[in-house]
Image (cartoon, rainbow over all chains, first blue to last red; front, side, top):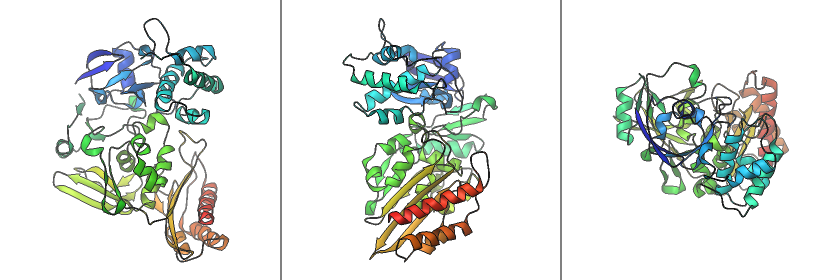
Length: 157
Length: 278
């Protein structure tokens, strides 16, 4: 089937089978390897991307379902010459260790901060509970998201 | 070649369902796609996600709500009617997976998969839901309790799709309760869960519905416990009677997530605490 989709602001026309995992099509057809595979079962959130602004596990989305949508992957998060504020605070607070969960964490955090500005730390932990960090660096991640929330710097789309 | 059908509306979806009984109807994909890379491609997929005919939330006469089968948990969590009238359902939706699953998983999908650990299912039994299914021949309505016919088995024919769930408004002042017991609040597969709705008249329990998950081959009503409580005054005595009745009516199993003894004990405690909260 042919799929028309906007990814990180660019239009794409993809010829593939609709049952394939969005994760595989991103990585193998489009070379967007910033999206990582963790568990492949929707448990860990490493493969999180945003579809029309909502976080999803790309390992659980049959790619046929993205027809007509707008996707953001980690490659589309930073501006052309600067990081997104959440990426900056993740760096500043040491919110990335081995790095496998980081793209998913960054995207889910971007969604959470935009969805509920001023959310409590506890609420942010709930919104981010689908992103597992096996280095267990949660405190630094949450601190980074709180700092991004407090930051007056505008984010980049 | 595995075909991916993207019907534009319900009648196209029903026609596709009738024409391709071997295709998989997929809504959010959060169950179906798990470990899909390790399986052969399906003969075909009929996509239901986002179909506007199936994502409607509509008020019913008498204060009830009709929920389109492809409404996501996130949609329900954002709806004031769900929060205001059916907090037991809202609280369950909030503990399904985490944000990513809630953005994608649907009520209809959870009902169709009908896992004994489906988190949104006990609230539907406790709220006395009716399931609306349709085929090209028309629509059929069935009480949710009768729709559950076995382990991961619902009364859905090969040419039918689940189109909506109808919830009647609970009695005024009814108490609603959701409790999920698992290893972690998010992303955990439940060991036991309970959804309960009860209302009192003149200090005694006029009506009560207690639904349990993960203690049988399907989501069940704890009818013996309910019978032991109906017409009685809530308190320690009533709670004890209900816990004893429960022990006689459920036979949970041992598996990798928990064991029979623990599940029974937790289920009894959940029921007991609910009775004491009334």
